[in-house]
Length: 84
Image 1: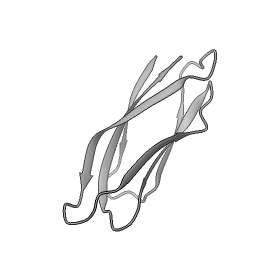
Image 2: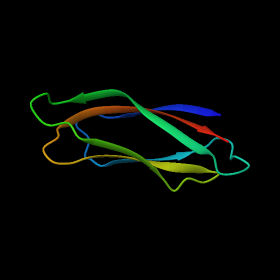
Image 3: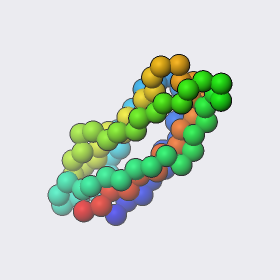
Image 4: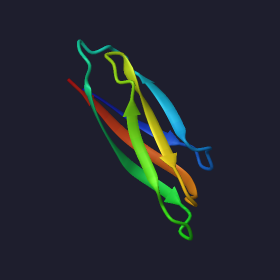
């Protein structure tokens, strides 16, 4: 089991994409669980976010964070865990 914390900088360009490489590869493709632990947005705009994982393998995965519409997002922190 691995745990990590990803912080995306204030005023980033969205979508934000991070490639995660596991320190030790898994023996088979793990399941990934993720959740938002910090959200900083403009309170005068609609809030729309999507967090997704892609390209999951024994060696790592890609985490994508996206917004749309008039959402103004200043920062987002995601915590994830990979389990066999």
